[in-house]
Amino acid sequence: MRTLTLGALSLVFLAGCSHNPTATGTAPELETTQQKASYAAGMFLGGQLENSLAQNDLDTDLFLLALQDKLKGNELLLDEETASEASGAYQKEVTARQEELKRKAIERNAAAGRAFLEKNKQRPGVKTMESGLQYEVLKASEGGASPKPGDAVRVNYAGVLIDGSFVESTLARGEPVRMNMGVLIPGWQQALLHMKEGDKWRIFLPPELAYGEQGRGQEVPPQSTLIYELELVEVIDRS
Image (cartoon, rainbow, N blue to C red; front, top):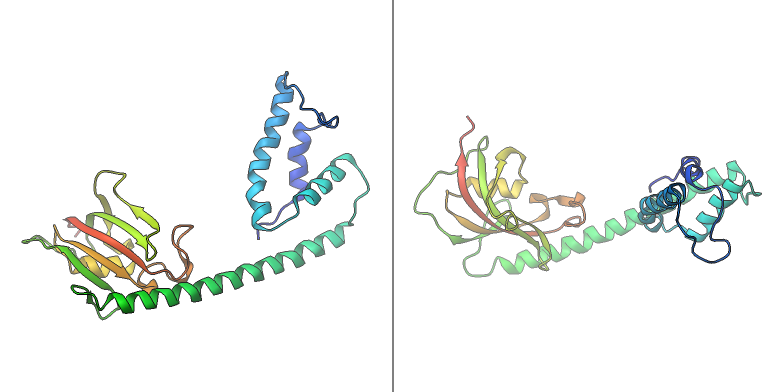
């Protein structure tokens, strides 16, 4: 949970808010620079807080009430000790809920991935490495070099989840991207070591060869199986 520090927020609000121009229920005219800057401060701070309030399932009305009471010197509904205890207790609740949601997502994604790979390996043309990586050759090169672990490579790629959701691609760049072998996810490293310049494979990566239980941002949920079309354009010797 992202901790919200009311003292810091109050300082920001105090910088631009000395009265309530909307108390009459009508939108104020923003005529002076001070008025516009005051409104802008609220806009920017609101944008920063919007996601945090939603992610932590906080009551926006009560948050605004407490902020107003604090700024105006009204009698507060909680004393400092009770407020601190409530914040700490709620943070633990939110953390527990998030961990439970992640646990369920891990179990769900892992099961879906196993079922997909079990069925996929039976398709004609799909081969399985000892690690569990599955691949099919889309284009075979007549020759060309294969990378070593210390080399760099230029590749074209497009990745999706097993449900077809987009993950990443070089298509928007319009050109292959250079990467060092040592920083690639394990599944890419394994596949590329067996590929030659000009080869294009479709690879199917179980979670342990991709991003595992951590996932990667919003694009790759935890314990996801990934599918990549991977083309090895060039091997760059870094020895």
